[in-house]
Image (cartoon, rainbow, N blue to C red; front, top):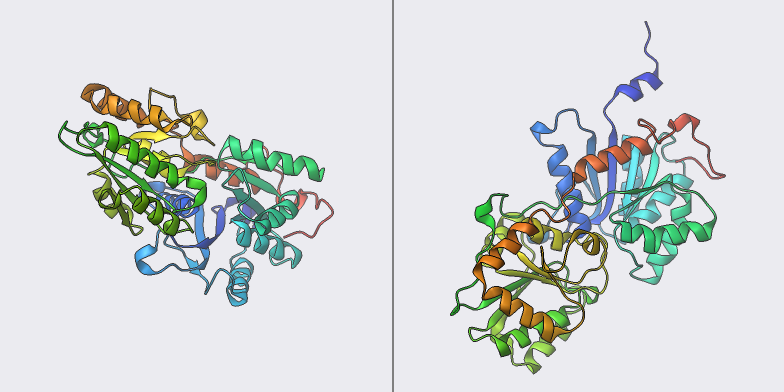
Length: 394
């Protein structure tokens, strides 16, 4: 009996190529690395072949992702050609593109017919556009993809579905929340105890130092905590500067907080685990979020968290149960945190509850979505039978 190419393709492991901007520190990169680490583990069994291609490599000390293919720069034409050659050579079942430059390359691969068998999925990680080019690329590309993956229901509701409705096209939308893995193991011993009455309350944030994160409010919260708590408070900010460092430095100087705020470069997971072992509270007061990877990592790690209920955090957390939600008044939030820190049993109980906030089998959800997109599971149509939607097939 002769086995034809179609039957071989159906029985071969699913091949997913995930195209991202860089291997640097960030939520998209953490999601990709979590998927890679899980799907390459010996215990993964017959999982899909998942590969990461990044347009640029970060300096070694800033690397958060172990990419399989790396280009020479996010804006380099040679890097773009390298990615397109990789799609042609590997012919993945599903090409997943994250962030606008990668999405633009997905469109280029489609128009150039780089691989006819490949299905193209755009993974959207924020419920708002970050710049005019981001808006332009996604507005044009979203209706032309085979599927859209959203990191939260908020991203789907606030950005993706409205964009698709305006286009008049019907594109399947999959909600896949990224995997947020505890940074310090999952045992009850990882949950933080409240600070002693004579010990500073140690706050931390890790992620990009970007305007969206509203770190000015985090510094403002620190100032109020130092005013009302006898032993004071300290703040550690971990991550790459995304345009806010100079303004934060000025705010810290003006408030006289220089000795109480510490900036640290991005860290690998082991280093970050060591750092948060000295931390009592994670703080993130963002204006907007999609999934909010750092916050979910902090919750999974059993940290008491002070969060704005935006993006997926609004659905995954409950004020006063698994976190303290900030609703705009820093004085009120500071007082609530001081009162909680003065009640050791309540402080530890919130950390225990935080570990289960928003828990989901993210890797399985991603794999299932890709199988549907590739036409290998219910909800999908085999590639050869799928209509072209009046556009070139990728």
